[in-house]
Image (cartoon, rainbow, N blue to C red; front, side, top):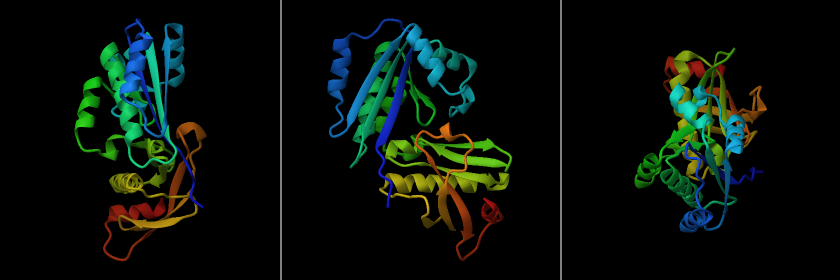
Length: 253
């Protein structure tokens, strides 16, 4: 039986401007960008509450894509005001919920001179970045990040941000250095398949990018590493045909 998950996006606007937006102005922004069939929540934090929110919510500077330098990270940590925008859709028929949440966060950022943090895929955007994003064709690869981390097995390749599409993230363990780009390509294809309406669940098997593999329970030691759980790709076999040494390296994953 397929898992039923709500699609959920979370954007946070960090501003060094201590002045809060008037409630009437916030109400007008929300009214301009309603989520038709889902839900959108907006919360604000100021002063000491903003400092506490930043301390508890921001990941390390190196976890962002691209990694934040000291000045950019300090600007976030020292924000005087923060607005948290959360939108959800139980049975999304399109990406309207994501677009509305982005527009709300973008308007608040433009009004306050703030920066927008994508809390699920660890990216930072300005208001102008959001305008450009909404002016071009949707590309899920700009909304889901693929991280590569050194581990004992030795490389841990995984996604962040699949919760935006009502799906668990994906993880790969034991990827050899030479096979990292093969792993990235496989995850990019899985992301595209989910956005197109695909659904993958624990215990299932599939065939993609020249491999046959299974989805299993997460093997990540830190259960909090993923926002809404993860599926581990395992039991790789090559589909009949030519395979590169980099592809063969995935057989140990």
